[in-house]
Image (cartoon, rainbow, N blue to C red):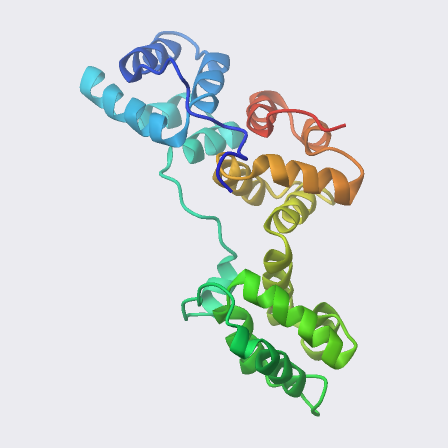
Length: 260
């Protein structure tokens, strides 16, 4: 969703000036982490790529390599992730489970037949035709699936999530429920992923970093709103309570505000 990210392009951008600032922040004894995190998080990914190129031209060195040598721990992992070219965050297990490409838009002619096929594959039969669930949930657009879910409820009397929980198990169940949640609301799905990454025994930093970085220019404002609605606390507050140091400061800058 364009324009709903927390990170925007910096208006007074100058790649050479930024490259020089970063070079000075890493030169000599000690590293100025505060300057590095504030500069990089206040630039868009496209601008960071220009800074990387300018750094190479001005100093003949690779910016990411220098950052890795100067920084450490989870803060380093986050900063390096910010420097990568953007990739759409996906559900890795889904990528392995579903190989086909999705259709576009709503196919009015197949809404009822898709709902019936899901019903026949699960609630109506002894055992479950898992391939049918994978085929339909993996190949239809989110807007089409939302219509199918409505038709499915009228047909079966159940929400599709209830049927998936009853008819499947293990890794496949986890993947199918993730697809349904994402089809219903992308922000709500990522809000739940963030909540799970921050709560419980230890923090799932890999998931936390991946979502915060990959959604920061897309829809992190909507994810924040969904987080507040679902969990009665703010993403900002949970990050503040669960992380520390420069890593925490960088995550909070990416978060872009508190919805308390």
